[in-house]
Each structure stands twice: as structure tokens, then as C-alpha cells.
Image (cartoon, rainbow, N blue to C red):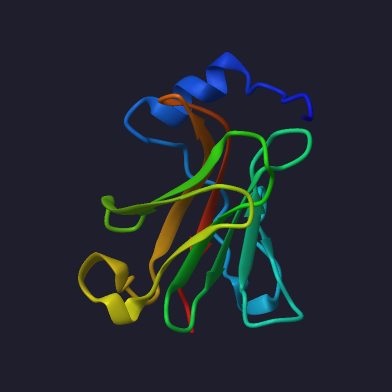
Length: 151
């Protein structure tokens, strides 16, 4: 098992204190790059527009987002006893959208606009995406990004 690196206490407090974060520089993925200062990166070789990994030394979780169809997927990519989780907030409208969780190496959980309701993300809005690992009721190794839903 790979040694996990813990998030600084201040960052962990920010992740759990009501999910209120200072805004990052506003940018659009239309130019093919992720918004400035964000942990997630824009993908270029596939239909996935954004990808982000957990903050541990050998990432155990990955989240991807494809804006066409609002396809958000979180995957557990390491056999380490932790589950990967993603929480999605509409940062523009200041509303919680949903949480996905995948437990067990190689497993994924997916949400799509075709599911309707909260899974159909508003076009043109900016979304706060938080990916972390969960084990025994505790979360750690979180990473945060702000992604645009534009297609």
C-alpha cells in the first residue's frame, strides 16, 4: 500500500466548512485549457472535457466531466481500502447538486443529464467539483476545481 499524504489542516477545514470557497479566476474551457489555478485539467484527446485526481501521493480517485450530456464520473483507481467520492455544487446558483461514490479498485459511479432533475446541470454555469477519498466515515486527500458546463 502506498503512503498517503494528508491535506493541510486549513485546507481540510475549508473542504468541510459549508463548502464556501473563495472564487478562482473565472475562465472557460472553450480554449482547451482548464481555468487558471484549478486542480482539474482539461482533456484534449477524448470526449472528456475535465479530469481531476485525489491529492494522495499515488492517486486513488479520479473524476471526469464531459460537458455534452453532463456526464460526471468518479472512479476508484487503487486497491487501498478507500472509496472515491465526488461532490458537485452549482457555484453560479449556489446550490448543491449531487454526490457520487465508487468503492473498490476499478469501480466507477456515473451521473448524466439524461437522468433528469439535479443531474441535468445548467448550461453556462460554473460548478464546484470536490473529489476525495472516504474510509471508515472519514474523508481525506480532497482536491477542488471549478468547471464550466458549456457545450
